[in-house]
Length: 272
Image (cartoon, rainbow, N blue to C red; front, side):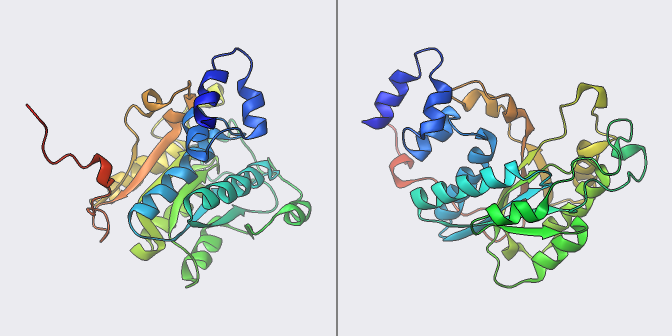
């Protein structure tokens, strides 16, 4: 009933922000309509949790790589709490950051004409005080990612928001995809923040995050990071962020080929 009312209310101009603020409707319906502070994070967390449940897994991890001031991590934490309650899947949240802003760029692939050392520094202690269960890992992302992977008490990763800006940092973060398969779902939802804006970056497959993705795909025969084909056309509301969503496919993962079609959609025979 609430979802039907929500659909009608959204036809009234100017009501979207109010509905998002009041958290009206079910989690699933709000994801479909993009009624969140960060609808792209909600889509990634919800999709990963749904996949995990379909595979019989009861817990996942979700990451934000590049925390900056912390608003994204706080939004991810809130989304995870609501999705966890709705789907009965435990969701562990972790944010990765240098703790001191961006490091110095390594070469042209890090787009030094756009970013430089010290950009996007945040108050990490103030952020920690606001976290409610989420973990904040500070340091070089390659080292902190290796440390996370080595811990045995971590649920498999299902969603990663990449906001590292640099090619070099993104390449280091891809170490997650080299870890044993139990550390991640067979398909990991990935949002890449830095492949569109700012326009002056002139993003291309030979610099930045797009370069890191291209090289990863060239180096791995049975793992590929691919955009979700025509995702924007499945959204009930315009979603420009859909063009920034990819999935890391691990074709050799033992769960990759497990069928996840719900029983009520499993049409084995269609009438003439």
